[in-house]
Length: 366
Ligand SMILES: Cc1cc2nc3c(=O)[nH]c(=O)nc-3n(C[C@H](O)[C@H](O)[C@H](O)COP(=O)(O)OP(=O)(O)OC[C@H]3O[C@@H](n4cnc5c(N)ncnc54)[C@H](O)[C@@H]3O)c2cc1C
Image 1 (tube, rainbow, N blue to C red):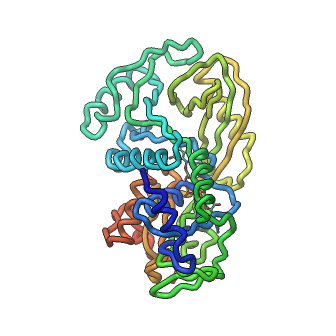
Image 2 (cartoon, protein in one colour):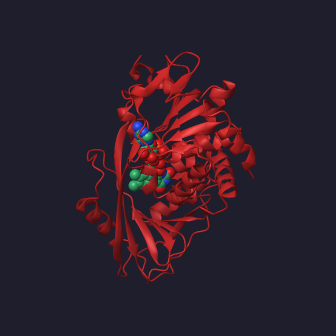
Image 3 (cartoon, protein in one colour):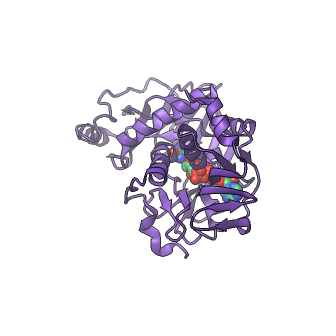
């Protein structure tokens, strides 16, 4: 467990000079701050009132790209960093948000069953694809060919974790819930100054807010809107995550999240009737019992064309850094990527070329 009193000392000592300024406290900001706490660095977080994709995320982590029967990029390593990170946060905040468990993927037919068996034989997939299949014993699920079982997946309750984490930062007086004013920033080669406090480093973790950031707003970060339905289905009685075209995620008390959708064109934050209809249609192709829709959530995932995170240091300003692009698989990759950014800043460990900001250098403004 963290030494909280040491953290309190580090984050409040000498208010006019700190190690890090972090802008944004969705999952990206939270994970970089977790690194700072671990390494006893002092910091201030600024997090505005704009919507956060993390607050509506389903929170799934799944090491397999089920559509293609392929392991997710660096799945084993990402899991080996992610699980201890979330466990450290649970220990720090004295609660539970990580639910590890199988993900049951509906098998469409015998051909898919055979594909699964072949895939499960590959070294990179064998830790994740069980060859013990599950017969459908739930009369409200439509699944004649049963289910394959994905191992080492699960769900993080991102919204509840974020609320608790921000409450914790408030008690430490290390978060300001205001919009960051880029015009107040003074940047030099040896420090950052913002509203009278100097910092050694500034990390932007703004999600889609990066589009307003004059240092990084020309990066090819695109919004991908996602929507979920929240349903109440007392007859369904699922105790694990199920997937067909959509995921059904049990929340307890007969409530489930159903989704998500992907839309690169609609960048509004509002839930739409089109997404609601799509999700209802897909749900009715998987379950036969009645359900009530008790909520609909929408958010914009920050993604880049190659679907990898964007991590690194501004090419001109060595004290300004970015952690973004977590729109796909932020829960799984976020901890590994936050560690990688911290190690790069603190110990000059090179960032993996596949996620490094360098791959977009020509896009960044000087
Ligand atoms: C519907 C949906 C479902 C998803 N499901 C999953 C899933 O199942 N599994 C998974 O791994 N990922 C999922 N994601 C992706 C995911 O969790 C998010 O995309 C990811 O959390 C992005 O995190 P972020 O911290 O970069 O951005 P955000 O969560 O958007 O956070 C950015 C923060 O920065 C703040 N900010 C921005 N600009 C400023 C400024 N100028 N001043 C102050 N503060 C600022 C915002 O207020 C916000 O709090 C989903 C996303 C959506 C939308």
